[in-house]
Length: 463
Image 1 (tube, one colour):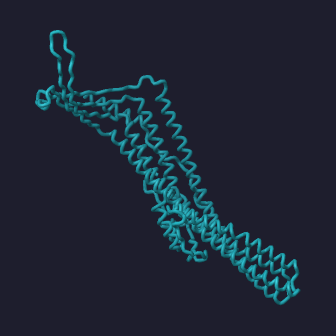
Image 2 (tube, rainbow, N blue to C red):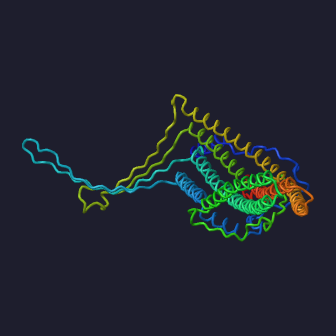
């Protein structure tokens, strides 16, 4: 009865030592300010297939299998799982086998022979720490939360790498298109320069006309190398993302026309569900849970540690008689260690864990706010870039029409060379801006996908 009473008292004290985790309140908007309509749609797990690009899908598949950051994140998961296994062992007894054999000789005393003593023993020793105050369970819960956080971290890295491959590939497409635009305009300017030089020889064009066209040719020629360099840098960046050497990556030019890419119309779900769709938010809360459990463990360290030990085996001076009944022995014991004076180290440890918890609380709050801000920004960019793309298409069409008319009228002697040069510059600028607008529209869609969690969904009800 006394033991039962003591046990009940210990269990009641355990409830006072540890406190359960409570999810902190988070502000959630009622609706997206940048979305005209809200539905329950969310991105699919393989959202990149919506761009209708087999090459992009192939690059992303390779990156998700071979990217070094993703592999490192997978290794961190294994580390966290191993640490959890180590912590979990504290809930079970530890058993050790001890076998020894020795021979000792003492010096001979006057009038006697040397004394030789043999000793042989085989014993099993077991010990078990009673986790009355929940310290070990809190440590395990903390490590479990960190193991979960490592998985959410890998999911976030998967999403980041996938988006990086998509954005880099799209930038490569756009830059390649801009290189072709610049080269085509340079070739047109060179042909026009040759025409002006012939006209100059015939007295139909002035030296100023030729000089102006030469300046335009030089200017357009200088614009090509930086674009070629950027395209090469994009390919090298893609090689790193997919885990290859740059020279080992070969991207076919079949999709260099950005117009072949489909810009999907991404519709967000309800704002209240966003926090369950973002692995970075889940990771932040898992770290918060781990910090909370560390506080419980630090509090439990103020209370006594109780360890039960048992040892049993055989001992004999003669090896042949080691396992005879007369050589049996056993020991039972119980150790209680109560912290008395540690100069404030234990209470300091509690204050430290509370401060670390407060830090994780702020990190979690920032992750929540950032998640909504990222989504609002991506939705706004998606809307505005779509409108900008429409305007750039119209600008390019009108610039092309103006340039064609200026050439016709120049050949007919109606306008001078200045008019042709101006319309040519406008056309080049419009075509280049159109390629950049197409890139911005496609990358905005990528941003919407990633800000919405990229199809990832957290299933744990604790979050």
